Length: 388
Image (cartoon, rainbow, N blue to C red):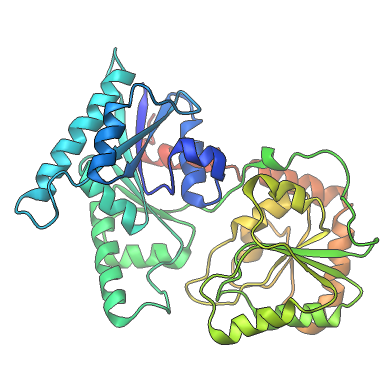
């Protein structure tokens, strides 16, 4: 039987994502769902009323890259605040979505599952569908955010509780987030880790040397408040014989951390590329020997970065600071963990040895094969329909 996933909370349309790239958990899950057998994904995007009308008028002219990928828009047909508008808007948007389904499925009506990402995706679900089975993906611990004011914290908790209460299943890659839902709602939870599209990193050939034979240590990702800049400073300062290569941009850093980052950019053994386009990430990883993961320990940071999966998929050993107690086990003991400065030299040596270790590489390949987005997506659908 055909299944339709109504996905609420993607960053862009399928059409645009082909250009922008599938960078985040939400869009990777959405694409993976569309690649499963007999599954079609309707990517439900919000648009202003005029654009939404135009989109539906032109819908037969528009096409998406894959037959199991459908872009569709919803809107507030009745302005917010008008009595009865939530119910009326949901009825109109459901009608338009169902009309598109009938164009796609002319013989038998498919089963329908909604998938919502973050509170914003849940809000769009209430506007556009508001019924039936629904998966809520919180991603990581978004309730214990130190940047939230007291008012924002109360609002976040209320919205997450509502999303949990309305869900059939809550998923996240954070144990602490799932524990919060278990304490706050009666809805089942599942720990669904991040993953990787290994085919992106199946580039042939050896490392591309750009540093005169020096050991190249790299980091690719956002420079946010979660990065341990002190540990990063120590690495760069204490290993002048190594070349450090960074790709990514700063995000909402406080004044102190921004100054530290600016100082690091002055170091002679560093290279800074800024934001690396999605399509160029595999080539970037071919130029480094060791991947860094230096996140600070925090109750809300018991999550595993997508970049670690990408390092491993590219065959790169990972030197990581243990930001939570389960990090080693989550990656099947494939990472080299270092918590103290005096361990760094030994950790670097171990990483270099792993690169050519046949047992480590065999274990790494098996781990990556089991950590695909399609594997994760299928596991969620299986938990919703355990007897299918």
